Length: 303
Ligand SMILES: NC(=O)c1ccc[n+]([C@@H]2O[C@H](COP(=O)([O-])OP(=O)(O)OC[C@H]3O[C@@H](n4cnc5c(N)ncnc54)[C@H](OP(=O)(O)O)[C@@H]3O)[C@@H](O)[C@H]2O)c1
Image (cartoon, rainbow, N blue to C red; front, side, top):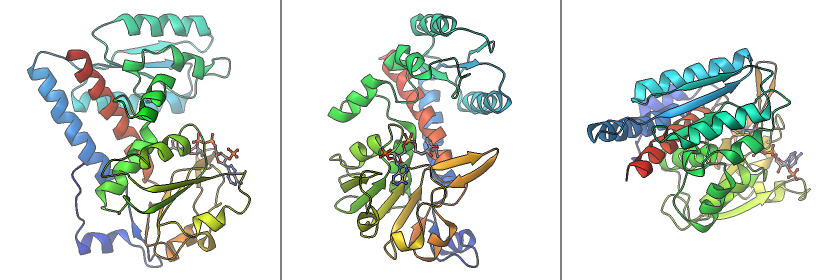
């Protein structure tokens, strides 16, 4: 990941009057990742391969339809073709699996995205499990999580991969430092702990994971060089849980309607040395990693 140094004037612009922490927005990181993806897509096309990211939407949820439209537009801008399957809200699990099976078998489709959440009667995990692991853009297929755990190449979970990229982009020292992750969920905490403890230049950290089984978790978060909140309990991270000068990454959120409630209280900005913004932190990097997984799937299929 090419790390880009932000000039002092840029940092000033990113700091609000009462904020002391440097803000770590995800967009510049995502832009760098997506520029690389676009180049790789172009190279594949020059070699006669048209990268393809298929999308599946079940039901008529407006927000989900909107997210799919945004991803399709972005896919188009990056040079992917993006065949779309829209199943009605009363589609059965079998209907969904038939579509997944067809896209799995289609050699012109390199990557496959099922928009989350599907309607309540659909078992998303079962659907994800039936996606060809080599077309899994989320990096959440159990085979890919297994590949991650033993250090084999494969799609990486998007939010954790985006957090590693964000830390690298802003040149936050990770190797040899203490990272504490609050939350051991399958989407963020658990895979991120694996990633940041691996022997790679942008990882190689001393990683501790805390959760509800560690009632005095603040004992650990208070000593962290890098604290990552991956919980989904609004405001769970307060200033007194943070070592002064530490880097704080807020990944967990809860939505109340359209209102986004982050894990990290705003007052943490007065203690942390660097902090992801309330909005626009790990969201953009998560989406960028989805496209990185998609181009890697196309490269792998074309070898
Ligand atoms: N920004 C993004 O792009 C993005 C992407 C994906 C997910 N998310 C958000 O990230 C969060 C985590 O998702 P996930 O799927 O990885 O995790 P998850 O399955 O929702 O698990 C949450 C974790 O937080 C822990 N936890 C809950 N309440 C706690 C408390 N009071 N004290 C200490 N630990 C507590 C839980 O502990 P136990 O294991 O002990 O129950 C669990 O390990 C969610 O808010 C999700 O919406 C954000």
